Image: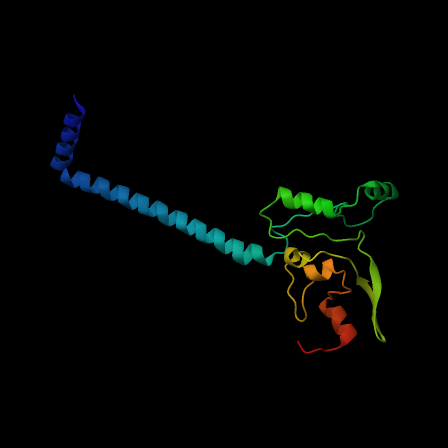
Length: 181
């Protein structure tokens, strides 16, 4: 049987069984439409979760390269000595991570472990036990911080080594009082 004869025979069978052919075609159309609808709903749900739920949790799309483990509680002397022997993470490590992850929105560097606490003073006011640490400008993006007043740390601040600080709300309120925002 030649190819053209096979095509003609198939068309004759389809034409002779019109109702069955119609329902078969209708089933295929409905199945494809349903599949497209399910895929669209799943993509919509993924977008909703990404924007609403995951966006509300800081760090859900971030990771940390740390010299020290994230640990709560007592660290014995031997473990502390091992941690202190680890190399300090520096700018060259940030550059390496940037090359390894070119699509990353932001890569930041933070100083200090354990995070030092200090007294912060402005004029005649002092606030005690404030966490003090240095960061690079992308830290604001990584932590998803919002500013009530003022500006975040900028690349220019870092390049020119300006003496600037970003204060939390409580510290700023205790130092400067109730300031208009």
